[in-house]
Amino acid sequence: MNMLYKPLLDLFFAAFFLIILSPLMLIIALLVLILDGSPIFFRQERPGYREKLFVIYKFRTMKDARVTRIGRFLRSTSLDELPELWNILKGQMSFVGPRPLLTKYLPLYNLSQRKRHAVKPGLTGLAQINGRSSISWEKKFEFDVYYVENVSFILDLKIILKTIYIVLKRDGTNNDDEEQSFEPILPPH
Image (cartoon, rainbow, N blue to C red; front, side, top):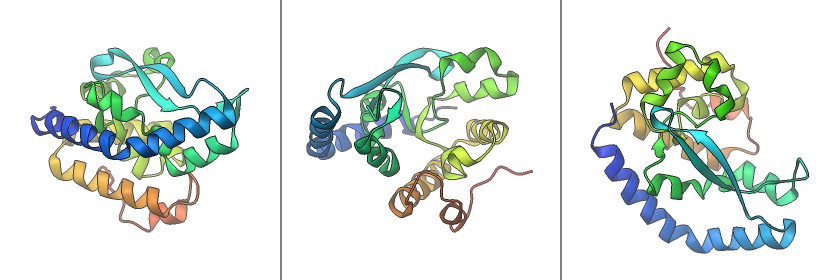
C-alpha cells in the first residue's frame, strides 16, 4: 500500500520544513519554556505502522491538566504539531495518513478499524479535513479505512491542500461552517 513516492517525499519535505521552520520552532520552544516552564515537548507512545509503538512529539500545551494561554494559541494554529516533523524524518509517520491514536484504544478496534495501521500514521488525514473532532469515532474510522484502501498521490495532494486551507482559515479547532465551505473528500456511501 505504501507506494515508493510516500517515504521519499516524506523524507525530503520533513528535512526541508525542519530546516526552514527551525527559527520558528526555536521561538515556540523558548516561549513555552519562558511562559510555562519545562518540559517544552509533550511525548507520548502511540501505535504506528503495523501497530508498532513509537514516541510522538508535540510542543507542550497543557500545565496542571489545563490548556495554557500559549497552548491554546499553538493548538488553534496547529503549531503544536511541528515537532512531529521529527517523527516523519525518522520514518515513524507520514505527512498524510490516519492520525495516531492512544495505545489504550488498540484492544477496542474491530478487524476493519485495525486496517488504519496498514499505513504510517499521518500529520493530517481524511478525518482531520472532514470534521476533525466534530465527527463520530465510527466516521473517523471510516475515513481512515477509506484512506488505507485508496491511498494515492492525488488523494494525498487533496488532503494536504485542504489541510492548508483549514489551518489558514480557521479561528478554532472546530468551525463547521469553514470545514463545509470546501468540497469535502468523502468515502462513497
